[in-house]
Image: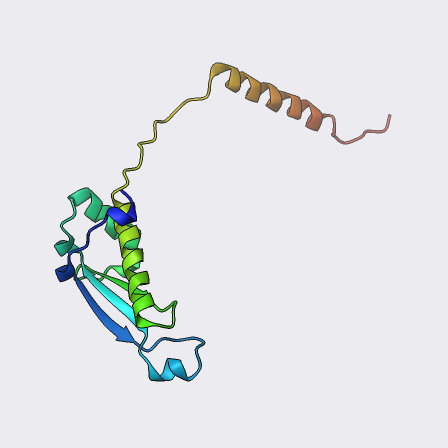
Length: 136
């Protein structure tokens, strides 16, 4: 699934605007341009596996009440930060729908095992030749 294909219901979202930090001169002190996007994960209507994967991907951004917090303060305008937050949410949801292939454990071949043992023996003989020198 691509981030462009993700549809997010409006009732699952709530936005608050904060004073941004960092450079920006007096604009930072006057205007609340940073966006804090709160997403109710239950209202997204995800299947259970995607829901658990989303919680795992989001990590500490998920509150105990089941809300995902995304803070966007990269840009100097509210609209650009709002779009950035929604884009990041869509990417998270798209990544949650990707199913990882199961790893099949493999064993080394008999030839690989023999080669490993031979190299260990060769290294052992090299190290044995480095013993103490005795005077005759």
